[in-house]
Amino acid sequence: MVEVADVFLAKAQEALAGAESEFANGRYNNCANRCYYSAFHAAIYALEVAGIRVTADQGTWGYDAIQAGFAGQLVQRRKLYPAELRSVLLRNQALRNTADYERHWVTEIQAAHALRRTRVFVQAVASKGAGS
Image (cartoon, one colour):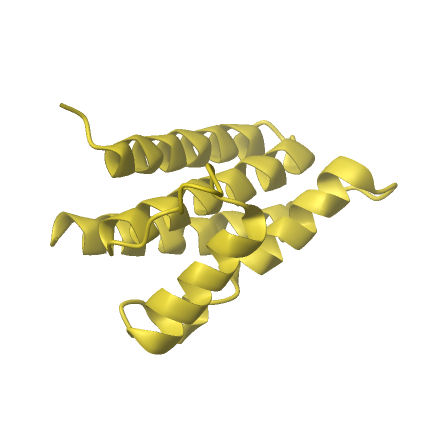
């Protein structure tokens, strides 16, 4: 049986592969979008592996709950992840907002930075989860 957490890690890795492809093809807005969702799904995986679950009345993970749970519980309180990962979701969300909703383009440099931090984030989460 496939664990729910494993589905989210697979989604994170798939979104990261999509971000890599979009970057390679010069589609920086799409790259930013995929970077955000890669980190988002990786954070859900990290929370699930750590035993932090969405409550029945919530039904699904919300953006704010993911950010707060990852940064507050897993980085700050439990110290499971390094402090530099605390802002990845927020930074990726801000860039995704630019890509998806603003009249500005995501630049190659911005996309490259997002891709780098997303790779680090997903790798950290995947390696920590493998040790559980």
